[in-house]
Length: 386
Image (cartoon, rainbow, N blue to C red; front, side):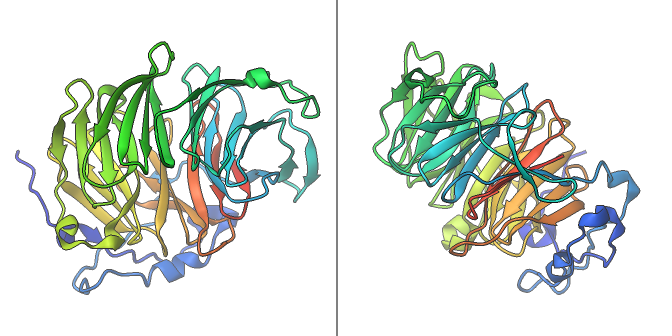
């Protein structure tokens, strides 16, 4: 059966949350009632409700387990080690910090169930705010990019390292030069690393570093977010500040597909995509927007298949859990929300960060093999949920 293509007005779900508290346990936040009043212009004829109390949606209730407070300025990025209970944060204070969730020193217990941890290592090389971080699949190295236009390659210290040991210069393995402006995002698959920059370029690097720069991709505007397409290093998806989104072929350097939307032609800046991610196994691209919406696109056709108002402010970050059943979103409205990927119902909402200069949550992530997720924000704090 041929699938019908819907217009965005037909797809948008008005977020009418029911006033039910039991689906998020003790962490209920009354912000859901406020979200229920968030609607899209001229959509009064839309009446689909988002169900929040369906027992089939319930996976687990996430609670704050650890609070990480050592950074001196906003935290822009975060990543987990693929195997160990280790997390790395990157900050506007120009440093990155390594935290061992199982062995870090406990500064104090915030509550009976929440602990404040101390980092076990601080990485210093960047001369400007750190904006992005990516972990090598082996867990032996990671990569960071910043406002200083460089990409640093770091060896990960032993998780037993004493935080009071002298700084080890061997931890900085290499610096990748090539970009001439801020590095917005890094994504890695296998041994291939992609970077996108405010200099207008996307660069493909060999993560083995034998041949650092393989290719450079240029298009119209500044690339804002990138991801490998279904973990396939032969194609990647990128969105630009021109409001256009493309799929590229890494071998030919050519555009394979352009996404269809009415906003790029209208110049609607509120449509801007802050983050996009590719579903690991399905031809679906999920995008987070300034207009408070999350949208789903079919990567085979480039057409939108779903749109929903998801937050009270700009949606800044997205992550998919390892079981590929839940989507995690973060927003400048100070909240993170968990969504069922199949029916797109909201499973849980937590208001967890403070605002600074009208910004709040910058990044979210899941651990690939342990029951942890994290959010980091402009309030200089990282929170770990279990």
